Amino acid sequence: MTKAVYPGSFDPVTNGHLDIAVRAASLFDELIIAVYDTPPKKLLFTTEERVALMKQAVSHLPNVRVGLFNGLIVEFAHKEKAHAIVRGLRMSSDFEHEFEMALMNKNLAPDVEVVCLMTAQDYQFLSSSLLKEVAQLGGVINNLVPKHVVTALKKKYSLPEESVSRKGGI
Image: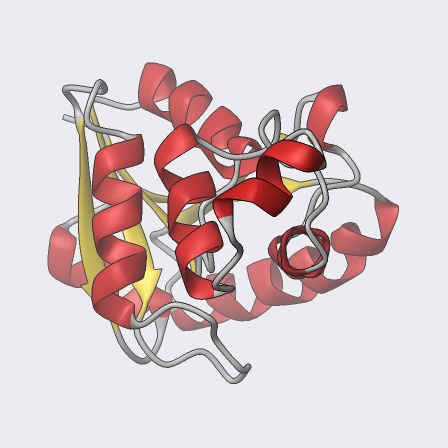
């Protein structure tokens, strides 16, 4: 049985993340989406909220489960008996960072492969931080995140329903 982990902070989960998750789920017998509990960045959603949003987003994928991790992803992969770490690449600027991480992870755990999937063209520009900025300003994001994430973002940013409908909805 081939098992992989797909780590990230997922603050919040986007359609770009889901694109990678769906494709990775078709490549492995089991995919564990590993939500990073304490990333070194300011988060909008709590760990519990990020896990819940991700669980709802992937509930239609029978071989996918959502877990929580701290520390090194290779240690989580070993604990879960995973053979691979899945990463998504959006553009060339991602490559350098992902390449460095892949080499470090290979040094730490030579038995765990890193599998990089290119993000679909529709989501090449999409990042959670850019998405949050657009959402906070009332921009249209319906095509970039699952519907339940739109609702969660509206609630987080206390956006009134009338402003959302006037602007065409986020």
